[in-house]
Image (tube, rainbow, N blue to C red; front, side, top):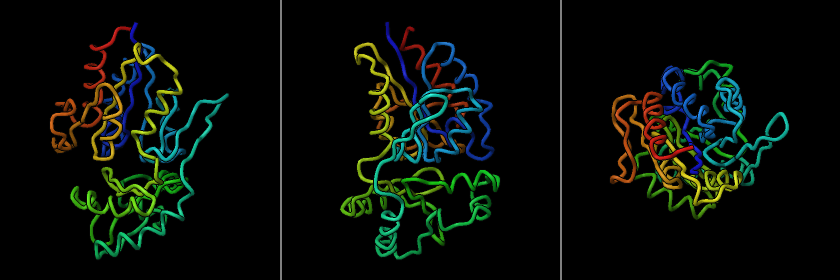
Amino acid sequence: MIKGIFFTDIDGTLIDHYTYSFEQSIEGVELLKSRGIPLVPVSSKTFDEISILMNDLGLDSPFVFENGSGIAYPEGEGYRADVAGGGIEGLRDIIPVIEENTGEKALPLIDLSAEEISRYTGLSVEKAELALKRRASLPFIFEKRTLLTDSEIGVLGDIIKKQGAILTKGGRFNHLLPAGAGKGEAVKKVVEFYGINPEHLFTAAAGDSMNDIPMLTAVNKGYLVRKHDGSYVENEGMFHVTEGTGPAGFTEAVKDYLDYIMV
């Protein structure tokens, strides 16, 4: 009998990029529940943000927060959080390196007010405050623009690696992570947590951004969910690209995945 684990990004995948609604993903969530397949969120969101979503969706699986810089494992009636790296301040020291190589002023998320984050993201001020409760990673944007280009990520990533960190980007922010972190590594640790014989396990993951690629690569079946405008991350045919966007694409991915396993 084949068992499964389904990993998913949150923003732009499990929930809508603009409205933050998960209405169109509920069908996929319930299908996984009905088959007894754990749904494991893997996101740039904080521990506090994802904890609320887990409760709203009725999930009791592990979850990965801050782009793989932390993993929350069920323990008793709550969660035990394992966090990588030496903390945010060490990552903040790398910001001048980024500014020197881009010639632009970088704005770390933790230096913004909840009100500023709310205006930028569309989150309520209360939820923006939860986004500030970071433990191990440092999102940032620039004073005159938001995201680095893919080519900049490649060049700067090599420079940042020498500083003992990882550079990536999601749908709204660029992210500095501690060395050894990342969504792909976190997925491997969660699989180990379940302790299922690999011969009896078929894993899948869904995501919509560049920082999801390591997660999609770490599973048996990767799904690239189309963005709200119908575009998707170039992947040289490595992953299945959904027809639907956002949460509708997530549910589509779940249905396709369930065709591969019998539980």
